[in-house]
Amino acid sequence: MKKFLSTSRLNLATNSLDWVMGQTIRQSLSLKDAVALDELEQLSVPEKPIETLYIHIPFCHTLCRFCSFHKIKFNEGVAKEYFKALRQEIRQVIAQGFRFNRVYIGGGTTTILEDELIKTIEMIKSLTSIREVSCESDPIYFKEGNPHLLKGLVDRMSIGIQSFDDRILKASGRFEKFGSGLQQAEYVSHAIDIIPTVNLDMMYGFKIQTPETVASDLAQTIRLNPDQITTYPLTIGIGKNRKKAGGLAGRPEDLWPQFLAVKEAMKERYIMEFPWTFSRNFGQPVENKYVLDGEDCFGVGSGAFGRFGEQFRISSFDIPDYINRINTGHSGTCYTKPLQNKSLSQHHLMMMMGHGLLDNQQFKAHTGKSLWQAFPLEMSYLISAGALNKQGNNYTTTVAGQFIALKMFSGFLAGMDYLREQARDLPLNKIDTSASA
Ligand SMILES: C[S@@+](CC[C@H](N)C(=O)[O-])C[C@H]1O[C@@H](n2cnc3c(N)ncnc32)[C@H](O)[C@@H]1O
Ligand code: SF4
Image (cartoon, rainbow, N blue to C red):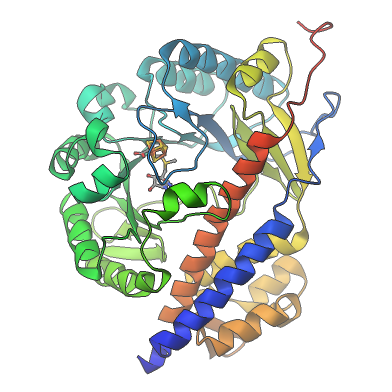
């Protein structure tokens, strides 16, 4: 244990990190300085394609107790109108000259209206060339839907399982709609046969989980041979969602032994890309690109976020308002917020820590500063917490460092929850529809 410090010292280090992250989130991700977007404001079209077009589908069959993503309970009429508006927004964006390398369709449940999803992807592919389409879905789609229709349209599918333990499925409100753990394993095995790259989302940090049950959940996941496995630490946020999700969560100190159980369960057949994502080490190599890797992202659809350099962009969280904005020829984005350089650098630090190497030269080439110049407090904290090993000019992350990166990732998820909570409360950015199409 010497290598990762004593458990109590690590707990102390991570508890103080939780506190600091809570403060940082409140300061840097407050929407008090969000600016209602002037309809006349036009983003200049970059010469190079933007890395990701993010499309949000805010509908689900069931609303899970732990989840604070932007979604409402599925209503077919509203969802159909929504998809129509969404395609209109995408056409507008492409007509303005924007181009993208990849499309990430997230939710919610993107396959909730399969024919509408197909129409949307086909439309994008007919208007512009893209390298890859990624979607998020739930397990029941692979029983009730027609996933073979997505062949040639969807390159990567990310499916939420969370746990095969029926007690967790019941406590979080998933059992009734998606079935037992055994049934879900059977449904998603069809996806693995059809879609080129399949990721399964698993979660840990629930009250009734132990290192042993986490290991058995992952053994069951690995038996399905997915290309990727994401292991999310249950995040309860810092705002209103904390009460709802908090009832499901275990003690903070139980996360460390569960993280070690995750690493142990995965080590034989999966490579850890980040302490929360794993790719199989058998077969063809898996291309690994994530929305949060820090590259620019254009968001469309209700509740989508986008980021260009230091500007954060927020689309209307009110679904009827979003549809109305698009149907009257306006942009779906209605607020922007300046992002501090410091927040962007902290994100960069989290990704470097997660990746396992803090390369001083590369960092300096990117930011003009050395690691110690950019993060004097953070570096002192990481060294004293036993998170880093010095190797020449660079640092590698220890197992304790990987765990701290995981806690930072959980802080990032909490920050996104906090943004969504505030965005829902922003006054509607009223548009003048009198002069519109
Ligand atoms: C937006 S959901 C979409 C997946 C799909 N709707 C489903 O549930 O099957 C993406 C993933 O976020 C993760 N997630 C949701 N709420 C979370 C929370 N509070 N903490 C950590 N991960 C969470 C879950 O693993 C989920 O599969
Ligand atoms: S976890 Fe998935 S199915 Fe559950 S509410 Fe969130 S987005 Fe919907």
